[in-house]
Amino acid sequence: MKLTFWGAVQTVTGSMHELRVNGTRCLLDCGMFQGHRKEARERNSDFPFRPDHIDAVVLSHAHIDHSGNLPTLVKNGFSGPIYATPATVDLCAPMLRDSAHIQEKDAEFVAKRFHRRKALDPNATDGAVPPLYSSEDAEATIPLFRPVPVAAEQELAPGLSYRPYDAGHILGSSAVVVTNRTGGKEIRLAFSGDVGRAGLPITRDPDALPPADYLIIESTYGGRLHKDPGVVANKLVNVINRTCARGGKIIVPAFAVGRTQQLVLMLHELSDQQRIPNIPIFVDSPLAVEITEVFRKHAELYDEEANQFVNLGEDPFGFKRLRYIRNVGESKALNDLRIPFIVISASGMCEAGRILHHLRNNIEDSRNTILITGFQAENTLGRKLVDKLPEVSIFGEPMRLRAEVETINELSGHADQRELLDWMKPFAKSLRRVFIVHGEPVQATALSKAIQDRYSLDVVIPTRGQSFDLV
Image 1 (cartoon, rainbow, N blue to C red):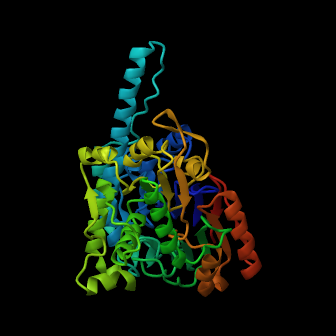
Image 2 (spheres, helix red, strand yellow; image 1 turned 30 degrees about the vertical axis):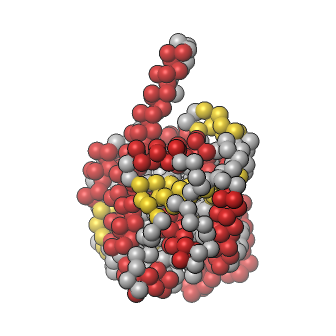
Image 3 (tube, rainbow, N blue to C red; image 1 turned 135 degrees about the vertical axis):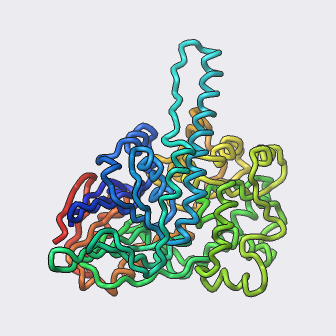
């Protein structure tokens, strides 16, 4: 077995690892790289291998940084199966369609702005960038998905198979164990995907993995310890009440998958408890509307907290003051509201979609609050807001950051250092080497040291393009 790391190495986006076994070539994930626009364009457009030489993709979960570049792979010649859990398959269809649509609309918006600039300044240069892939490319990708239930064994090639296990990160997320039984011996490679946390709303706790020889593990929060998730409700209440008291709006960038549903469920509980003002709450994301329907479809994956609503005959993701918005006209109408409200909108890292329009219209008003509820990758607009840069660029225009910025990290769907170490414990003794990915250098280095200290294992933080023989 030969393992090569192409994405999410010393960064948290663009997860993609290539596995070669006796002429078979598989990818573990095919995620979209996010960051500096020029670098992201180059990374996502130009694969370091021929896509038509890849035989299959094993997908850990539906988040765009793990699945979002599949249409580009297909656009460039890939036609093999994409294996994922049934819930991940159901989530990826609307997500990839939405990703293509957003790219097309953002390109159209930027092009219109350029033409207006050109009318005022004949020397203006064209900053337009075509979409990475089209809606047609996304539609060509969706039929390639093949559902594989949790704990079921799926053959990838003769002597090569894998099993998915519940990762507890988002609905349908999986850690996988790839087994190679060729050459007279058995070698097992575990891939964590993104490891979730015990006790979060909606998703069940992560499964323990069986023994493995090698492990690829994420390190998003590899050097940090999360605070108790129980404090989130109080922080959320404080932010909402404080902003409403000054007549402001709460703008919440949130991933359409997982984070939006977590927030809606929590706001449902706080509304029932009358702990927040009776203000309108909007989920302004056609994708989030579709994703929420997938969540409703897969109630068999709920944890106890979400099931409490179901057992009472209630919808965890619907209540009186909550409104889901689909069309653009309704979204634009929110800009005319002069009362406090909450709007949850994608994308989670503020890199595309309707959240950019909400930020553009509200970022310069000091009454408003921008509430960040998830990890923000380096160089994204979301990270710049977390870092509270005095000025940021939105759609190419400089905007002053006058709104309050609050961060709630306790809802993170990523395990922290202690949780990652505990997740490894059942199979740590069997491991011969650990590869750390999906983390910025400081986080990856901290997790590496912690693993070495606790389990005395050989740990590697690979670089992009680095290969290893797994024997």
